[in-house]
Length: 220
Image 1 (cartoon, rainbow, N blue to C red):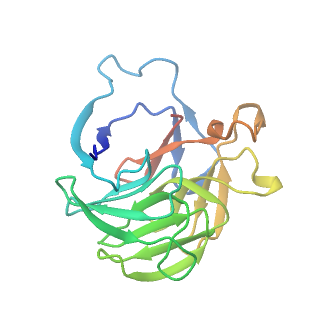
Image 2: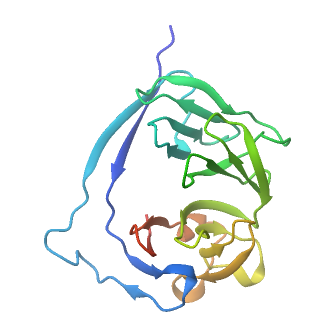
Image 3: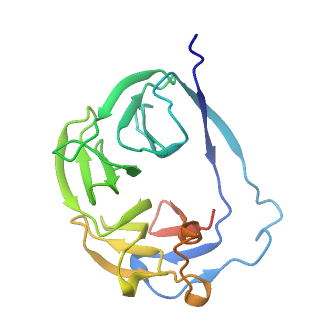
């Protein structure tokens, strides 16, 4: 008898550790240890439970669309994107595995774009694909490395957290990326400038926009 797996999604309001001005300016403000104000806290809100055979592991890339649907890729494979209805019931495949147009490989991050399109970052194909709400491919562009998180800036560019395989980018986890995938700035060096290939999580950051012109970055 099949017992469905359950993946619980929550919305989190994080305490940011690092403040990053838009478009990669090098100055930064570090928040001191402990909350900046006595009233600051982390609040969790239950959203939905995803059930069914499509739930095949921990969510790797996940996005909630304006109409309440969710797009999810699952660790460890990440080789397909599933669509879930607002009530958590699986609707089916949004993007199938492969290397061809509209197919995906090792999806590490999914970002809803202004309007109703969706940007899917594929580490396996070293590209990003833009889809319409129903999963039809609009365009693709090459990306320089594995993207783990992103935020859209007010100028139409992206601040991304990613591993860029080049000597000058090692140990630099944050980058400003144009819509064509090219980088215009890199910043946010790891403490001491150290990069550990055996500890890749050291470069992971979570990004959040303040809704105006700035992006916050936090170490998970």
